[in-house]
Image (cartoon, rainbow, N blue to C red):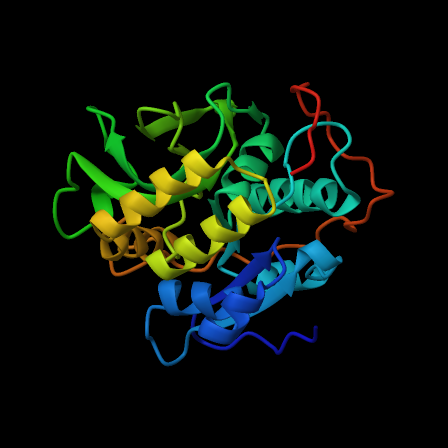
Length: 293
């Protein structure tokens, strides 16, 4: 895609690691719109670009400096294992690059795992299997960053939509676990003040969860009992979506981290290394053998 010159407002890149389902396209105009509606601040000069990294569409190295932040979506693909597709390895290199540039990076589900791997953590299959439904996430007792910029104290816990069978095993060096659940040890982690991973889906609504659950059951990806449990949680109530999307927006804009209304743009950076599958990718710690979704 062609990227216009940066204006006075903030600019973000959505890195889509999933193709649109028929339902997402018909009901929401695609996952691109799901994310934009969830994460846009409403500021008139804020700009978002979308790159379908799953199809090999990546921002050019010379354009990385135009962005204040990057958001990585979920995906049906694994982020772990040496057999990961070329675009996954290329994505990990991109995440390492923009993190080193001081850009804010938010990873969601697969993106949470890819960010962990890119920064030197360990990820793999969850020994407890699939986690699907509206689930309660508990925040650690000594929670400080990134909640310092929220206008109110965070709750002890908050519900979020989960659809995953992989998880973070070990956070990257310098990382901190921020939240956990009964089934997943690392529901959220941060590295410094510019990398945040969330295992759940802040952007999802219950209708997306129910449609996805039905598709996973119908194609035998998950057992019927897992699907029934997931439907039951969705019927019992909505996730705390307003809290989660508010947290993501505040993180991306850096509100409060500099004591003012938002973080200033970093100084101009030189061009990043060319991002290609032939580029020498940094070593990633070994994980369990990959199993296709």
